[in-house]
Image (cartoon, rainbow, N blue to C red; front, top):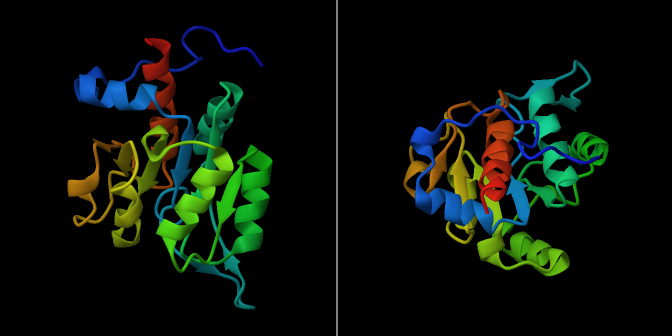
Length: 183
């Protein structure tokens, strides 16, 4: 699918797009993210049988598909389980790298870097809580969702206006694609 020169995206809020953010975003080739609190609203849902369920935002999914259609890669590094749910959603969206039940996000991050053949400066990471700080310190463009914990905010170069599970990933993909449009 060929995208038009606007990537089919709405206008970004230029107030937040400093030269620093644009320059960092232009270098990004791989978008990684946490799941709970980023792709979802962070709440946990269980069936009466104890099976975990997750709710995803379709606009976030469209943003990920647009990112892939522009020739870039994405993935999830999550400390929680629900591997089957995440793999089903990631496969549906064409995501490239899925690490669940991560006991060492930094190690999993470096494994993904090697597999993707990118440097840490070519990675954006979207996080929401203290378990994401170790990755936000390493990437070229650390992004926090609007409702991220206060501990995460000092590590974010960009903070979304949307909350996790409510379009934050779409906002990030729009930002990345918009920055590349002006390269």
